[in-house]
Length: 113
Image 1 (cartoon, rainbow, N blue to C red):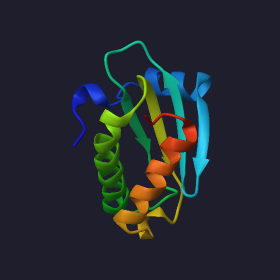
Image 2 (tube, one colour):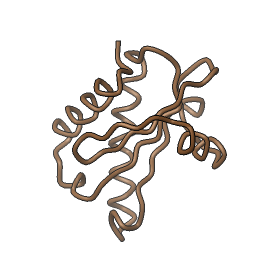
Image 3 (spheres, helix red, strand yellow):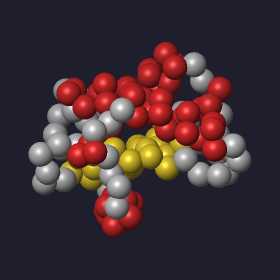
């Protein structure tokens, strides 16, 4: 689980990342990121109803992504606000494949050490 200070929670924070942030796409994930002036990086996740009508599937996907983002926090270069958008089909991916996709996404964005 991500700590409270590692999560984007306010709509204004999400809006700022969407308006001013850069983006990178990898397979079934889209990452929007923006440098912040805080002590730590923060993650936010967007999993819409178009992804799945079942809340249990949407929540499982967010839990898996939160776990991956928590594990990657120590390996980030700087301090960023990041929003991860999910595409349909990722719920069928195994966790180890999802981990590879997630890490490649961060590498492609140039955020990993």
